[in-house]
Image 1 (tube, one colour):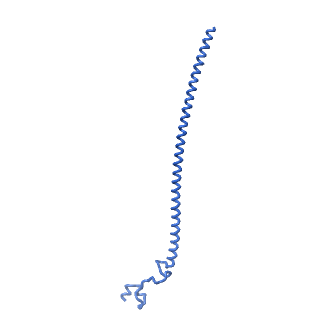
Image 2 (image 1 turned 135 degrees about the horizontal axis):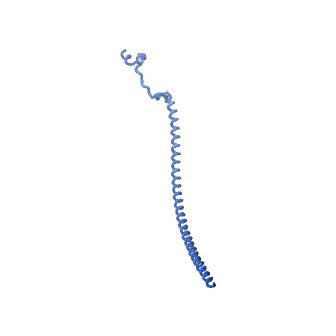
Image 3 (image 1 turned 180 degrees about the vertical axis):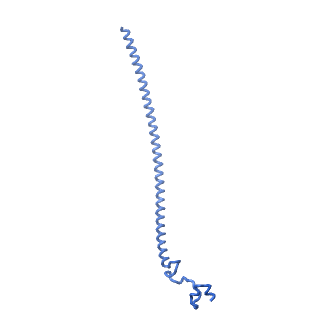
Length: 139
């Protein structure tokens, strides 16, 4: 028949059978085909993927909470560091002011000692001169 030559599958079918029928979804899920898989295999794969997706969702939630905790801790550390720097800078300024006062006090003391030494040196010089003159007068 001319129709059998156009459709090679039709040549192999008995003449009483009509054209191939489309598969209907009236079969139970276990017997349906999805690509190369049966309905049951698809169901098992979907279950496996669902468990994997739920695990990923839990991990994402834990990661999100961890990131939130890290940002919160970072904020606390940043505040602590600012307070520490402020305290350290204030203490450093106070220490520098105290050191400056001590330096001025020591400088004044050194000047006073220098003045006393110069006076003492003058007195010694005058005393030596007077002693020399007295020796001359005694001679």
